[in-house]
Image (cartoon, rainbow, N blue to C red):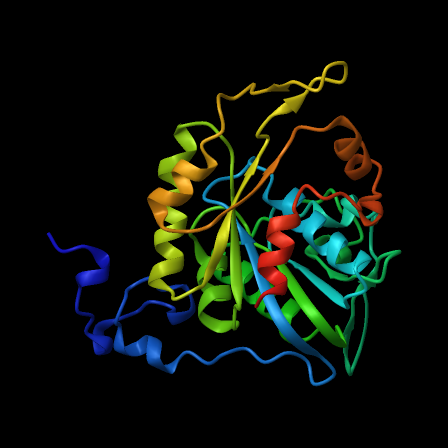
Length: 284
């Protein structure tokens, strides 16, 4: 039985929504239009941060990357594309409705260090209310948060992707120009297969992969400095080599860092844990 990428699609009989279609070489996909930013917006580089599954720290990594870039004096925008699990606003200290709109567009929330932030939670009166939508509606909201928000002239747009390879990643990868993507994983062996699916998706969609970040890699003993590996020895180089991508950073389990995020003070991050990832982004 042919795989999905090998099927020939008869466009006349196809009822699929092209924006959420994963069939490679489908003639209908040639007609998908790229999304344009708001007329008052420009991005020099757009970076997607993704993972094959939830719970590996993708949002943490994207938050720290954006905060570090802002601390270096870059103009940064942040789009939280994880619509059904938006955690980014709380990391920056936003507890409820913050975005404002007019006939000219939507104004994003502004963090203390100047990051222009847009998330589904910033559009809701009750941030605890669940967004129980089907995939097409969620994808449409992500498209609107990209094209209807006036982010201004920015050096970088960071997009925190939802986990997996579903509708929203397809929409972002097909309709937004991505200059580079960073994959986040953890040391557990179970994650390796999930990473492979996400890596293969990026390759199918022609998304440049900047490299791999291993989160929850180790804990450093506060007394002697010894590194302890609670989830097993690091496999960063091994996994990255297997997929033909660059090994970037190992992010430790760090109480002070977790506390910073929990307190909504992500914009105070100035650490060097993601230095290789920052260098890879700056090299674009």
